[in-house]
Image 1 (cartoon, rainbow, N blue to C red):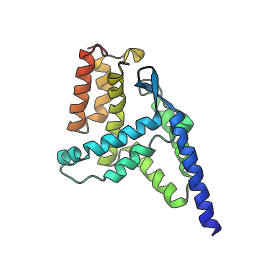
Image 2 (tube, rainbow, N blue to C red):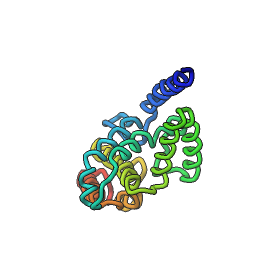
Image 3 (cartoon, rainbow, N blue to C red):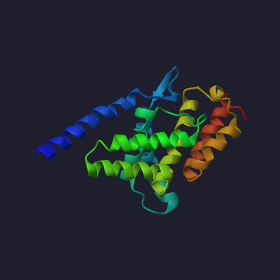
Image 4 (spheres, one colour):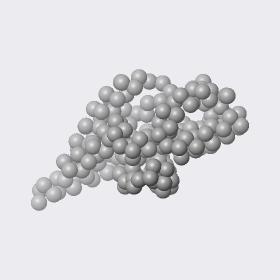
Length: 199
């Protein structure tokens, strides 16, 4: 019985800990004048993957594991509770990876073994993009800030980016899917038309 209660205590502590994701701010706005939290970002990724899941399956002609995709959306940024949100526009990717990998091992290591192992496997699947599901989630993850920079009117002046710079950041990830690429191009076109992105 002590083992079960110990597992339950670890689960309850993780529930408390994961709530801190709401405290971590991203570099884009959620609404004009307020930064988006990482928790808001993760929720929206999950919703977008759910909404586009059928399109992705039609596009690729194969069944995709929606549950695994939603789990990746919800958990992939938990490491940012410890390392913060590092902007895709600035920062050394190797330093970010090392810090996030260490944080993932610490955070998921607090869970009961089976669940902690699932979290760590999903996190590595996402980070290494070893499956189509992971590549699609990574594409949605990359697309989301562009969408919000357009919708909130924030634009890209704070990162001094023009359309070609945005393409260089977005297309390597969103290019995995014609559906995501089409959505990206519609956001890009509308942002240029609104004067939020230099051509």
